[in-house]
Length: 288
Image (cartoon, rainbow, N blue to C red; front, side):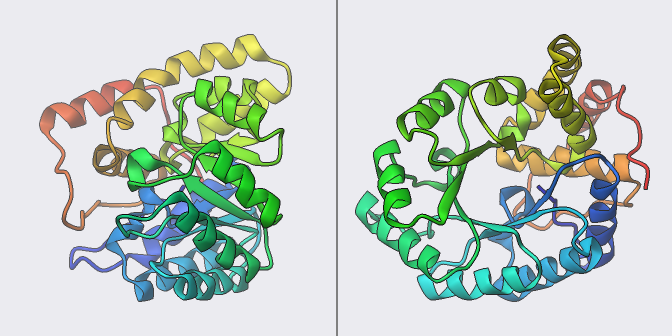
């Protein structure tokens, strides 16, 4: 998942975003995702989301699969933005629930289903109530998939015990991707996830561990993951914490330049920056 970078005046820095894409392409990652929580999509208006999307598309030029999160508050808005994302080369879309209180599961199923019916690519649901404030039960997700077959993926943020139950009880109807900075990378793959969508700051290392697991090199993967895990746990303390420190780590590793935060934001502390440096000391540059 890409980070949003801003200039000193608070505007999106399209050059930094493009260089971030280039770094990810050369990192060994298997795909790119944009406009999720790590992209600070909730701080961007629709025009800025389009600018971000077009900057990513122009830099990527189809070299990796692209997943785009859709966070507009209405059915019409999500359909419109989804079509724009498809026009920019999105291979699949990730729908977020609308930022509206009081919605029932039935309301959410109808909301997502109406959007999926008007889109021509595979659709995922981001089911992360701990981050987004609302979500769907496993039964509701299964109902949604039965009634709208192109809802065939899930970004299911949760521990492996939950993801295992989700995959078993939906009988493999979804390709499931975990997030959470990749904290449960190996166990998520073990219970049947198709992959993970971590932050950009460790894309190269996590892609290599993924390849090790898929290649049967489990001991090597476990050793490399154990070295990375303290950093991931530190980064995933909260979404504001990830944005504060993960974005700076990505900028350092990709030589992107100075990081400016768009309020509201968590400010880094001297201790936090020192801890980040110690936990990431073994990670070199992502060359591109």
